[in-house]
Length: 126
Image (cartoon, rainbow, N blue to C red; front, top):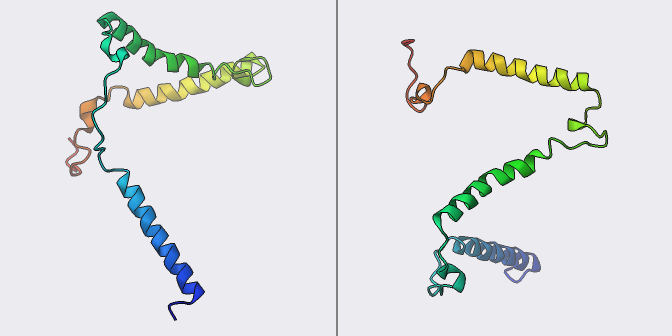
């Protein structure tokens, strides 16, 4: 029977899912709104030096602010949360050792070495 409450519930869920699909697809439709009026701020032209300074600041500020997390003390009042300087030296030495191994193997690699990455495999060994 079509008027069964279970069937009506299933049908409502299906219709809701269909409307949700249409709503999510409409998010990708280009906007057809009226042209935006320019504000007083857009009338002010910035000098090229100011644009350059703001671009440089936008580049290095996140690096400076996020690198402060490496100096977090985590309650030990020491960098990286390590309270023994010998342990910190061993940690850095281990990382530098692995870096030297990697650079020894791949240090002379260039961008052109992987130019045929999406091509066929070359079994000639050139």
